[in-house]
Every structure is written in structure tokens, then in C-alpha cells.
Length: 198
Image (cartoon, rainbow, N blue to C red; front, side, top):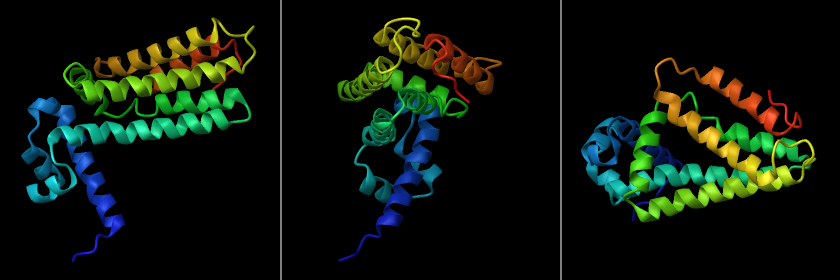
């Protein structure tokens, strides 16, 4: 019986997901074949199917891994002594991939998949709810007189602006650094100066 090296297994899985992300960003889930992913990852189809039985499983894994990181960030943020520090952690994490050139294509693929795949839609919705609840709780711990709106409304605006910024990432002239700076200015306004980001 062959023993599995966990580090090699994780590296190969990550290589498959990286190749899949590039293909899905270019052609979406339906426009990507498993052969495309194998070719980009430099592996055979047997190896691919050892890790992921279907193309849909690859797509789910790609986003599930990110959702797990989101959950970890939310947990750390809620444990922060200073709610402003926790809020900063979450918002910086939300915007961390803004400059990634794969983002527009992956966003488009995810939006399409949400409308076609109930399980995927539930994964994304649960993540959105977790982030909103985390933002709301952190904002509720801050001085409410300084917030532009009630904590749940500020949390809602933060998510909406973050989502809209990602959706705009494929527009001509989009500048991730400028958008991030403006997002931070909006955060400062929404939190009444309670949150200054770097």
C-alpha cells in the first residue's frame, strides 16, 4: 500500500486549484474542461479525479477554501480586544484580493454558479451572513454615537461597497490601489473616524 505524503498531497491539490482558478476566470465553469485544468496543472486526468471527482467539486473547493479563511478571520476579529482592530482585520481581508487579475472572471463565474447551484449559493450566503454578523458585532462594540448609521446598517454598507468594488475590477482604468484608498476613506466616514486604516 502506497503511503501519502500530506505535504505533497496539499501541494498538488493547491496546484490543481490554482490551475482551475485561472481556467474558471477565463472561461467560467461551463466553458472549462477538466482537460484544460489538467493541462494547466501539468497533471493527468487520473490525478485530477483522485483529488476531485467532478469539475463542480473543484469549483466548490476553490471557493470553500476561501470561505474557511473568511471564517478564521472573523473568529480572530471577534477575539480582538479593540473592536476597531477586529473591524480593520475583517475589512482588510475582504479587500485583500482586489488587485488579483483573476478576480473579475472568478466573480462572474461565481455569480453565474450561484444561480445554477443551490449548494454553492448556500455556501456563499452563509459566508455573507457570517461576515455581516461579525461586522455588526464589532461595530456594536464601538461608540454608537460616532457611527454614520446603526451597526447593522454600517455593516451592510461595508459589504455592499466591497462587493461593488470587486464587480468593478474589470472596468477599464480600474486602479486597485486607488479603490482601496477610497474604500478606507468610506470606512473612516462610516465609523465616524473610529476606524483609521493604513
